[in-house]
Image (cartoon, rainbow, N blue to C red):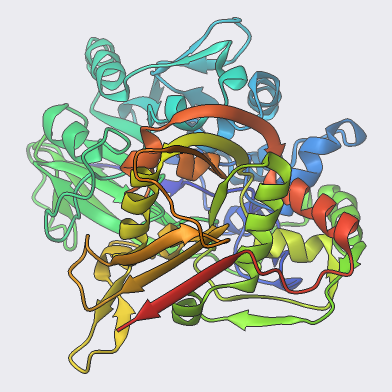
Length: 524
């Protein structure tokens, strides 16, 4: 019997150091702490599923000041882990060709991404690779990223990169790998499952996530997924063994794989037999990241980390009155002061008729003095701002989707629909609208809950008339069930990121008082 160990991360989103930048407190997470736990020999593989370059103030700070440092912090983290193979995630495209190029050059591991074509010819990634371990096991490995990069990404970031269909690319890569007669085959796919693993319930009709299709129809033995941030330590797809770690490097997947000989009779408890390969047995588990790290490269990058902490604590303005942490149900029912700020930033920047924004999954507040750290804490994504041409009917249909967030319990009290809770928390798919006076009646069935919708000045919104709506590039794709928004025409696509616009807005308008740019009423 020959054995292999795999450590697999995905969607680490710039979590390198074991710190929560928003709260300025230590936490058990980050590539450096994972590196401290990896026990690697020549029968071990360390793999990553992408979305590594975006997500924390560290990456934001580094990418704006990379010339000041003689290292790449994300690559240093993965190199400390001994990362062998990795693929790209959709957020890795957020900063353009040169940023990807510099990242790949700093990585010691091999980038496998079968469905990305480099039109300039400088990127160091492969369609697939073959790895022979110390025990002689021969493994074929490929990678792919969700084709929704083409939907979400700014066009200027893709002028020298072409993202094709991941299913077809992975299929072709496997055909080539099988010519090498490998013992088994692995696909690292930055995409998730289009069905709920436990129930088979269809989660989406789009091709954003194709994990189930790939697992069932292609011949990969092991499918390592990501993108959805759903913790799943094992999921069988017609014999393909699939896994997915959650985001932010707080947990990772550890796998033991055994390739049995025909004569081997050893009993393997807690292993799953892989149907694509009758001699392959796999066991996997989610492991919580520990609280220790190696001295290097921690010490090597410590000066940059200290620079980041000083930068985060720079004051940029203040509120006339602090905003206490806003609970999710309270803001859904009565509105959010934080969301009002986001919407006002978007309205002022764009001049659009209406604005919509969302909040993260966690309750948020804002202290009276505002620092860069506060902005990074309340707006954690590098979203840009887009202006769409929408009809009044599009606005109404989108508000009906917002209103579907609610259910009424046996006592007639509002709660959150499971559709926004499972298979993962999606409070961020509840949108807040500005420049609008609107009302939901939760006693009505879903799809018929919008009972009032007019401009803030009281004038009517015509269902046939065209208006402008400003929102994030994320929502502009229609993601989250907002199909009508996704089908609307884009009339302005900015490159400015919301965290930067928020900082500018606070500096310009300090001291900032309560912003009243909408009226929301929910009855039940």
